[in-house]
Length: 94
Image 1 (cartoon, rainbow, N blue to C red):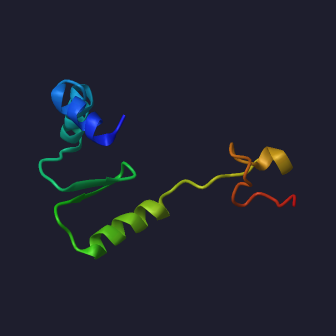
Image 2: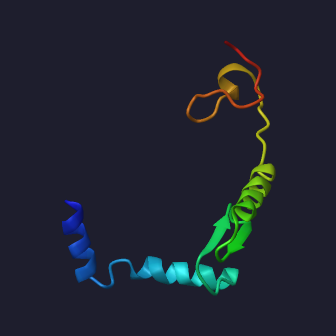
Image 3: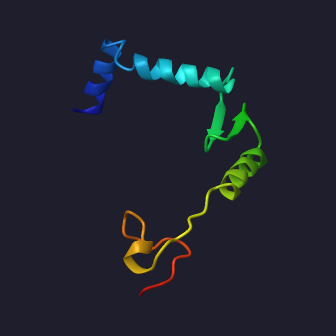
């Protein structure tokens, strides 16, 4: 389906994404969001309104610093992720 056709179909069916929109509105209410723009980073850090670059940089840095680290268990094939790539910190078998 071409993008213009898809847009026309969505605009013709006002209920097509209604459930997703209501769910988004409920999540925004739960988070205390009262205006736009509002950014939620990693489900933990919030930036409200138009902010300087430094504010976004700090929020992204905090989210990066708080990310969980993987603890490899085993060696070789056992110490690989689901995509078969070696996990960070796993002993090298190459």
